[in-house]
Image 1 (cartoon, rainbow, N blue to C red):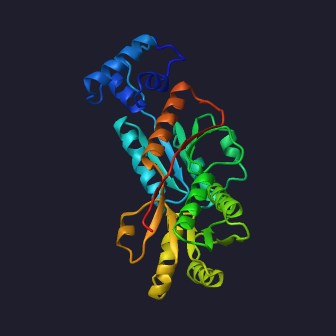
Image 2 (image 1 turned 135 degrees about the horizontal axis):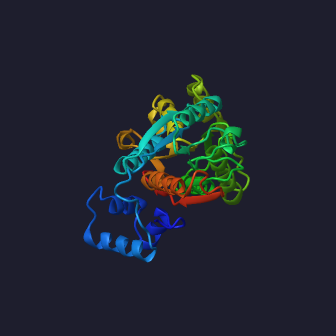
Image 3 (image 1 turned 90 degrees about the vertical axis):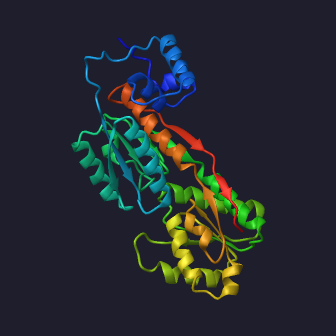
Length: 328
């Protein structure tokens, strides 16, 4: 029998490969090159791992994925990465879009639990309080992109504070002296951290420069006039967008400005998109490693599912580095 304390994650870390690769070797579901396969097999022997007897069917789990807002480029890319790994392993995924509605998020959790999912990947709406329903779960949870202020799950994402600090620094290095920040309500974890990074840069590197902040409402039609007035009244020459959707809204405003004003405003946003190369004016990007984040989220969740019904209830963070794509 398999030793209870030997998990796919332990094997993967010892062999220096992914959990997906370990699963393919054990279950013979895909070709793995000889050297890698031998490394995994040696590790299995060293750890005294014994797979489930062939006469016993392999259990296929359903996994639930709840995204905060599927419109975001980040979530589209992460979804692709999660789906690719799950498909390779024969795992069925059930996706939900909370549309940045906290009540809908709870309904999504309840619906997925009724479908008997074996684990959840969640990008939460509000960061200030952990929904009570998550405290009562007997299945593992992995948080991506956003997290609650207090929780005991694994979080996979980036250091949002330092990423926005670096973004503001990039604008400043490109000549921007009056830099604004456009986000949403700071009850959202990513917005709060990115706003703090922006403010900290101004305080440390631009003494006397007051923050210029605009907080938009989700799914409201007043974004265009509010952004237009924000640019005019703030006399901004640099803008840090907290999300890609906000950047799209900003660009729709800038497209209507005279050419000389378009050239004056430097922009940086989160998450790249191929159409940025075709704009009349450049947009720099804070690029998140979405494939790595998606892979780590699903593989970590599957590892927790393997350990038992309650998973590993310890708050942990798995943070990835960002890169700046300079187009200014």
